[in-house]
Amino acid sequence: MARGPADPIESAMEMALAPGRFISEGASDSFVRGLEEVAQQIGGIIEALPDRAVALYETFIAGCYEKAEEVDDSSGSLGAFGGSLFCGWVTARRAAAADPADTVARLLAWMDNDQYGFCFGIEKDIASALDDTGRSACAAQIKHLLDPGAQQNQENALRTPAYTQRRLEGMLRALYVAQRDADAYITLAEQSGLCARDCHAVATILAAKEMTAEALGWVERGIEMDRADSLGTSASFDLRELRRDLLVKLGRNKEALQSTWADFARNPSTYTYDDLMKLVPVKDRASWHDKAIEAAAQPGRCPLPSLIPLLVKTKEIERLAELIDQCTDDQLEQTSHYTLEPAAETLDDAYPGPAARLWCAMALRIVDAGKSKYYRAALDNFERARQSFGAAGLHASWEEIVDRVRASHSRKTGFMRGFEEIVAGAEPEPAPAFLEKAKARWAPPPSR
Image 1 (tube, helix red, strand yellow):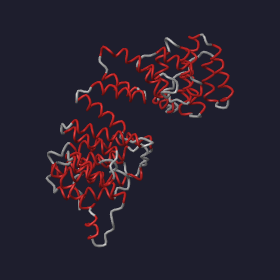
Image 2 (tube, rainbow, N blue to C red):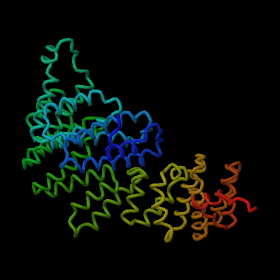
Image 3 (tube, rainbow, N blue to C red):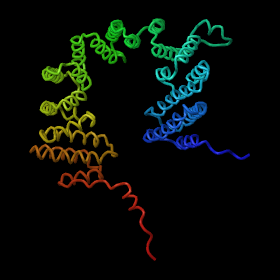
Image 4 (cartoon, rainbow, N blue to C red):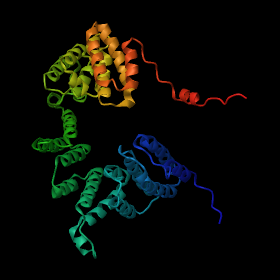
């Protein structure tokens, strides 16, 4: 029997999934971007053809599960994409006027058999994708599954495993937040053990209902729980941010400012600095800036990965140069180039000496670790270091670096060839473009 014309979206789906081809970690982002393009096509037909969209989402979800064994998903991008398909499927089912209870039953069955983690953390998104009827149906179904009496009455049924129960309770929490049902949320949370994250959720519900003072009370309760936890909790930042917003809404700006200052003093960073400056009156910003930088620069107060970006952001160039001068080589070499490179660029003109140390630290971090893939970047950094040392008149310091590299890395012949060119004063030639190398490989056939 002749096969009918292929569905164009299914064809694009199969091509994007690349059956039989292994996707490495480095290629996973590009692979997922291709999948996202197909998902956009499905999303584009939900309004006009919801039933077809439902079927396509189900096919796509099944295809992603089938493909999972052929993908190194260390980055988690495929898992996150899979979760977005479930949300699209729920939206399409709603547009198709499907039975909400059936949607919930199918969704929970999928979540219960989610061997690749596609459903991890999607509770909030699913709750948003459901309409009011769907949320009510989903909540009723979950409460039924969690009811010990209902489980005992099921023939040959086992009690809900602990992991599944936590997933169901998490879904129910998300539904209550979406429904703005604070009382139901509190009842559930108290049954399973109220935590700081629950306090933030309840406060969010109350804040959305303009119950600002009550919301602040729950935030304070959550912050106290967080303080009592020796390791802190994942809700700490969200609670403090919400506390500031609520205080401002209540007209208690001075308290909000003091709270934000306490957060900055506890953990100086570009983020807490921005939060602080949002609340400082314009006329007082200069004095608060000085106060903040002075506090952050106290010895031992702020780790380098936070302090260096803060000084770069606030254009505290002299303090930055002093900080780099005070650091040991080991401290700098243990710091990521994401932190050091912007600092080196900032210092290069006015403070070439400290900048040279940063360029060297980035280069040595690569070479000492033997990361040959990044030797070209290391050579570029050494060239910048040579120029900066020269501009600062620190020729002896450059010679010390040269001696160190020669003593430690003489066997890295390919790298040393480029390094010696730098020492001699010749900038390394730029790497040939990919297509230029390809053209050189494809030599014309000999003439006859």
